[in-house]
Structure formats: C-alpha cells, structure tokens
Amino acid sequence: MKSFHDKVAAITGAGSGMGRELAIELAARGCHLALSDVNEAGLAQTVSLVGDRVRVTHARVDVAVREQVYAWADAVVRDHGKVNLIFNNAGVGLGASIEGMRYEDFEWLMNINFWGVVYGTKAFLPHLKRAEEGHIINTSSVFGLIGVPSQSAYNAAKFAVRGFTEALRMELEMEGCKVSATSVHPGGIKTNIARAARLDPSVGQLGIDHRNATVRFEKNFITTANRAARIILRAVEKNQRRVLVGPDAYVVDWMVRLMPSLYQRLVVQFSRRTMAA
Ligand SMILES: NC(=O)c1ccc[n+]([C@@H]2O[C@H](COP(=O)([O-])OP(=O)(O)OC[C@H]3O[C@@H](n4cnc5c(N)ncnc54)[C@H](O)[C@@H]3O)[C@@H](O)[C@H]2O)c1
Image (cartoon, rainbow, N blue to C red; front, side):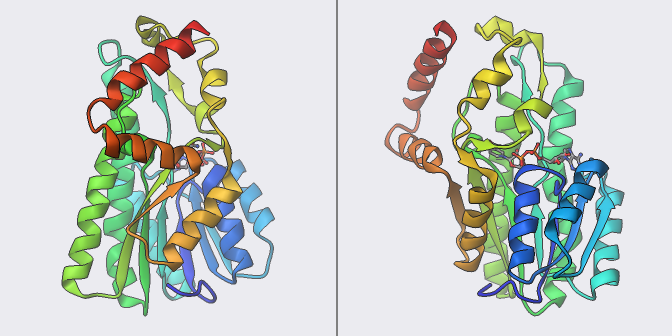
C-alpha cells in the first residue's frame, strides 16, 4: 500500500500505546479510522487526539469475544463504506511461572493475544478482499522470536501469531489477491503494557521479586510508541513480510539466528544477573 490517503484503517487496542500512535499517524496521512478498545476512556482520549481531518468512528470491542469482533467488522464497512487495513494490535501481558500459572490467566491472555488476532483477521478478510487494496497487520513481539522465563503464555501467543501471520501472507500470495499481511515484532516500547499486565506471585520461584518486577521490566522499554507506529506504517508501505521495531528487536533477531538454541543460556544468565542487581 503506497499511500494511506483516503483509505480506511481499523485498529484494535486503540485506547493506548502503539494503537493510539498508529491512529494519530494514520490520521496525519489522511486515513479514515475505525477505532476500538475495551478501555472506553482511553479510546475517547485517542479520538480527541486524532483531530477532525479524517472520518473517525469508535466502538467498545473486546477482541476476545468473537461475535463482537465480527459485528464490529460489519459496522466498520457499514459506516465507512469499505475497510482497507486491520491492525490486530490489542494485547495484554502476564508474568508467571509455568508451574504456578493459573489456567484462568493463561486462557485470558491467549483469548486476547492469540484468538483476538485470529478473529480480527478472519472477520475483516472478506471485507478487505472487496476493497481495492487491503493489508492485515498482526502484532507479535520479539517474544514471538525468543522464549523468556516467566513469559511462557505471552511467548505461546506471540509465536502463534507469527506462525499464523506467515501462513496467512503465503496463502494470500498463492491466491493472488490484493490483500497482504505483515507480522510485527516490537522490542521494548514505552507503553502501558507492563503496568496493565497481570503478575502472578509464582514468578518468585524464578527469583523475580513481583513487587518491583514492573519497574524492572519497563527499564527495557527504549523506543517510543510514536516511533514504533512510524516504523510499522513504513513496513506496510513497503509491503514487508515482517517488521522488527526498535534496536533491541534487531539484537534479539540476530541472537536467535546465530544461536538458535544456545541463546537460552544467555537469557538465563542475563535474567539471573538482572535479578541479582
Ligand atoms: N510495549 C511493548 O514493549 C511491546 C512489545 C512487543 C509487543 N507488544 C504488543 O503490542 C501491542 C500493543 O500493546 P502496547 O504496548 O501498545 O500496550 P498498551 O497496554 O499501551 O495498549 C494495549 C491496548 O489493548 C487494549 N486491550 C487489552 N485487552 C483488550 C481486549 N480484550 N480487547 C480490546 N482491547 C484490549 C488495552 O485496553 C490497551 O488500550 C500488544 O499486542 C502487545 O502485546 C508490546
């Protein structure tokens, strides 16, 4: 997609972080917006920030609820006449040991971070095919490239999003249709994700002090959400299969390429050193 001007973009999780910045950047490029989130206050703030240069609709949509996502996709096309882009961006965090993690928390995360992406892709795909150009942008993570202790549920969801999106991109190419797909792999981005995350005391088993884990985790957030949004939009313009967001994402990518399994030793050493500090 060479230009976003006069296109229509739907964004999940638009009430904060990268979803909000994607909305702001797309509006600046003349793209009409259909924004959704479960956080209605955050969503209202995003709407006020994008201005009135483009047509903006917004809705409370829980991406974990299939019917809501499908109803929203239909409403977007009804309200805007078409939809060209779906950013399956909404996501949550969870820190827990595998042994101590509650199934309730694991399922909560999978329903949002994995199933939310599947619902968004399948609900919007027929509408995107009817538009002159379409693109599906699914947010994975660097944790979709490497496994990390305490992040098993997040890893499972983000590895799954990556595999799902890579298969999707190839299927779209084989069909020869005008819809494409990009898998997004951000490193540490300065957003609310860590503060909104669930943290299980079982991380204590791994030597992680759950009282200050959020603050420690946020020290790894080095890229602004606005910079991340610009990088993601550039990748859509260039029709990239995947996009690494932030310098740390490149480091992780190279680490996995050079040491596909040995990287785990480095992660364990790094994690232990961080705990000791
Ligand atoms: N921040 C990072 O370091 C980082 C790194 C890699 C990947 N990511 C991913 O980027 C995406 C955006 O996260 P962010 O960092 O901007 O975080 P954020 O917390 O600032 O924004 C996430 C948004 O998703 C919304 N949301 C949560 N549950 C939802 C649900 N069930 N239905 C609809 N919306 C829901 C939240 O209300 C919030 O507005 C997520 O998928 C996240 O996993 C973030």
